[in-house]
Image 1 (cartoon, rainbow, N blue to C red):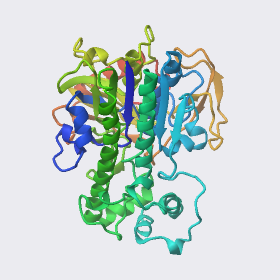
Image 2 (image 1 turned 60 degrees about the vertical axis):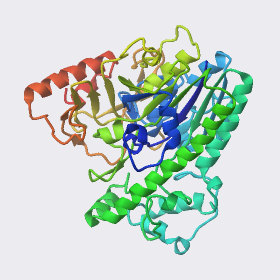
Image 3 (image 1 turned 90 degrees about the horizontal axis):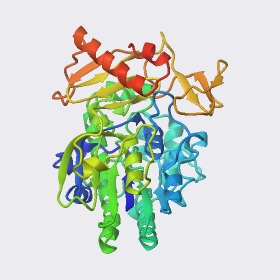
Image 4 (image 1 turned 120 degrees about the vertical axis):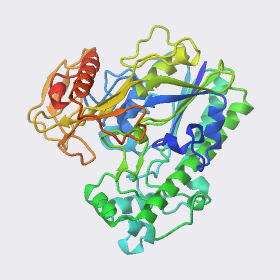
Length: 490
């Protein structure tokens, strides 16, 4: 059996027709839903981009031990295992973080065929120099909320794009279609198609730029994210039309991904691959679009960006179905290797979803653990969603890994065999991480029926105690570091 994984970054499931959206055009994602199983309880694992990929690539839960970084020497890379099984392995991607110094090492190197399209987000490639006075109005608008240097760096990457085929999304899907043709010739393949879109910034070609509203050169396509002062300025000005414009451009970017996805599905049709190929469509996380006064995907992990899409098309599924089975990023790793016939392999933390897909089991887990390193942990099950809260003042977070960031002073670093199941010494050192998060955060509890998560039940002390007991049990099963309990207020 073969595998085609489509991993599109930052997809909000509530923007997809198969999850109830009625205004964003995603007919090709719907093509998958019409012949597969739609998962309603698929959640993020470790946020954000690279932590999610490490979980999919290796099946190892990340956020309890470390954050954004390289594939570790002790990780069992999915492409290495697929190669050993005799599969042709290929990845086509424009994800710029594979080019980020030590942060991106090891992710794409194990694939036999690797196509990297440059130019997305802040990709630090060589590009023409740009003077501030030469920036177009939409970039100047972005500089109200983003550092000017970041705006210029992004513009240098996209300034020469003219036609739709110049955009990296088109190149990724075009190269993935070629890899799919090659895999069909081999007869045994694992192909990853990984467009960075609809990750921000949402600079789109026509017709997508004006598909959901008029094109405005005076409004930014950069959401105010990952820069606290810029976000404060943005929301202080309460720019309703700018927020609407950002949502329109996000939708346009998603529709562009969907359009080029259709070319992959056309290859599936033309080469009659549906009878021996499992197709998986998912994302790493969603993206808040201003409704809660935030952009991005930071903790707390609201349903709007944590409950993400997953569609699995299997030759044994003859009509569209839905499932409420719980699943998360590490399960994609276990599922793919199960499909490829990696008999006896035990994923570190993942569980294959094939029994659910084949109708042999209703659930492979009773809930999902997710979070972000040095922030809070979350647990969701049939009854409640619990955001633990955290206190990095009372108990700092520690990073566990084989690499120490050169920019991160680590005078307290010590080495040892700290990670359960890993017979290799790693560094342990104090570190906080990411996204301008506060040093402390209180707990939240929401009933599952409260899908908008508007009513925090954490004031009920008995319920809070039960949630903390359950979360303690779950992270203990994962072998979490001892300081985690105190830091997560457990």
